[in-house]
Length: 307
Length: 191
Image 1: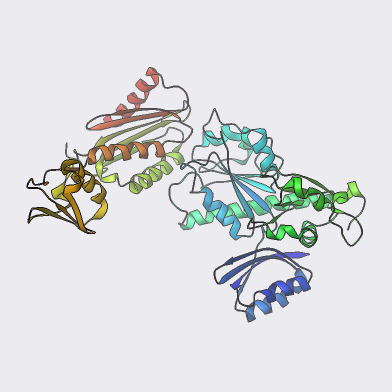
Image 2: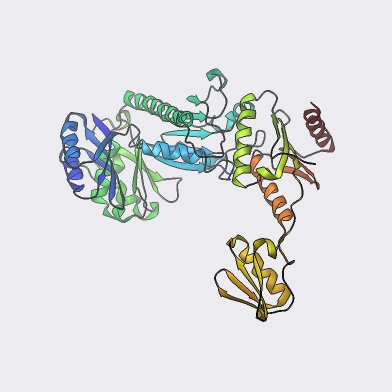
């Protein structure tokens, strides 16, 4: 059982943390260096947590649980215009990021209004590559009801946010509805506004748990962090990718930020100690995001073994 | 007509009490951002989300006089011309442009960052630096477009000397819709 945690501390000696996590059999998911401070997002074996806590104390760093680590969440706004951005969509995305998620903001090309709102096949497929999605709608109850067709065809859990209180049974296609967010023209800073952001994080956590429960019924052949480690080792070009997060983890696979045409054979050829290649236990396909590579790990029922 | 800044501010959205409360906040935030609150006396907003349309009627507080050279800097007669010392640099670009236009580039000098010298015996005192009225109306239009819900792409705008009427809707705006919106706003003003 791996615990998702976030380490915040000075750059000085932070490599001791990454080395310890590797020795313990954990994984380093993301490393962000901001001047003299570093933020590390890691998965650490539950029983070894006291060792890491002791080292963190020694380095005068901070160790927090990051419940959303290793997941990718889409934050969808009706468009990218000033009416919806930067508040509150950026607040939501940033808040999810602080809890360890990789959040992507998506503005629909024709998502506005009540009668003319629509979402195309590409947008649907792009959102479906995430683990969960947060839709940020406005302050009118009638509009929130009418916009249901935008997310009806999605296969990932949908968290709908908006202003007014709504009954759950009125939004049957939403996993959960979080009220008191809506459209605002200032930054979220009041206690009630921050409380609503906490509610969104909690709702996303519950949505991810439901996905995890679904996956556990037919477990994956291997875990995404293990694939990430193997790809980093055997396709070293990924380390010089310009993306802040060259490999983004999902609950059922990962996205590798290298051009598909050039690298998909190398990625499919990644070999594990047990003798199987990634191409045999996962589907390696082009991602809808730029020309990246999307890896979806096959469940045990399809491969017949676990590595 | 004498009015206090935003002495009347009413928002009506039948069936959408939460929306009405929230849109009050949004309108205040946007008017504050653009520095328009002091220029608006009364504001009535009516939204029918079932049609749907978004209507705003506002009364403008007095007319803003054009900004002249004497308003933006200290003017003193100097040897061979006039010297202008500017304290607030906000209108510096407009001031230089106005002086260039009136006297020609070779007659205007800037010996220091906030000092301008005009080589002429004609005083630039009454020269217009900025037309605040036009700027206000442009900012007001920007504010109304920002305030109205984004999906309401069909807009109609009637800008008068003392008041303005703005209507935004999702469908084509018909004369009947304009009459209906004006009727609702009229009802709010009479109430």
